[in-house]
Length: 383
Image (spheres, rainbow, N blue to C red):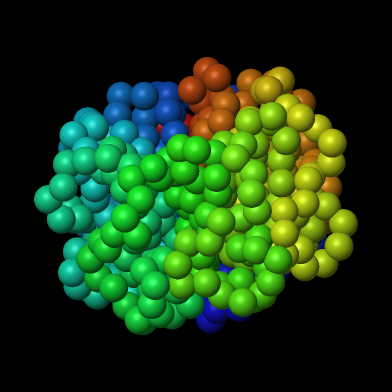
């Protein structure tokens, strides 16, 4: 467990204790404001791309992760610059990266390990362009490293690499600019956890690398890998998401599989450590999964949303702070889209483009103007 994780865990435990003591269970609020298209959540900040392609962030801003240039926490959604062409967004522990519709890549926030990819280790409080390429497709921001795919099917990573999480065939500590991972041109998606990464290829295979001390690479061992290694022989993987020390993925038959650390029940399956993929129940209607820190959430074809694992800050959204070892439904709504993310707090977008958040709110990461923890989804008002 990293120092940063221990700090957040301690704060979360304290917040949870206060929450339980006062019984502050908040009911859902009515949705209002402009619509959300996507959402990303770091340890204590949140960002969303609105339906008008503008970018808004809020919450913790001590490293500049909100991107408004102030370095001051924001209690409500704050616009990042004036651009109206944001396409995708992802949030790491304390840094944020996004791709614009022109194919350029931008990052900001904490940069101690070079995770912003701008050739320095200096924090940035506003978005800085990563190189000059205009072919970036999607980006994934981890704890202290970042990976992204390009439209030509290549994969690139940078940042902290002590355990080989960049997949470059070495464990050199810090890489401050994007480096290509191998020579393959068939990468379809990539995800970054605390110190491991996983990706899918266009042939349906899945590959993981980096730290495997809890079996999070799914390779059947706890030995770390400094280059991408194929997970099993299946060619039906459709999506993958890396958490702190666990990983979950969906297959084309809409089954869900998880592996790695299971101390909070985040695998949604029995047992402690699992070093190879295990199926989560027998349901075959999963459409997407998101594994962040020690909590996992997944959406189903009926529009329902389910979460499990660590719930110390009410991030599961079931009105309690009890950890859950099996998928637990978030309310009764059947209008959740596949745009959702779970960290120490959780956010999701519904089919009417309304944005809802719940869980830890110590840094106003729920965007409601308060620091009140919420145990059930509450709508975020976007300006």
